[in-house]
Length: 157
Image (cartoon, rainbow, N blue to C red; front, side, top):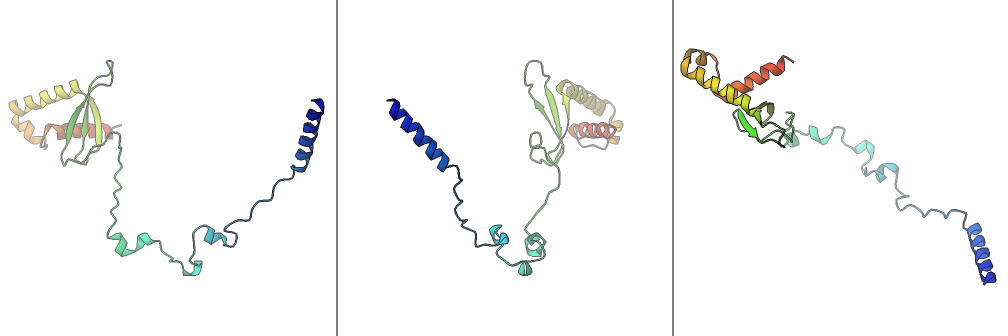
């Protein structure tokens, strides 16, 4: 048994000594290509178009770029008018929020539902008791008035 073990260890040492040299790498399959061709550029640099394709007037007719910032977590589809949506609380400790949106669907701000209800009561009271003040507001809806208030306070920050 010892003899077998000794032969095994000697064989292992011999194979380790001969295998210490790294194997040569196989030749590259794209070894005949230039660096440009490896990167996908098969047109010679002298014959490549100087302008990017986006400056092509025919292509530009079919592209619409909208640079309006969007927040996919909060923004909604554009509705064409100011909107206020109530959001239920996430847990028992959260207060229900009202989300105010622009006609483009962008979130303008958040208020508590109780605050929106108080503002709506004041808005309706003023509309009924003092129509001259309501006419001077130059707004078409309560939602628009709340949105203008939010924009006003945000601009003062």
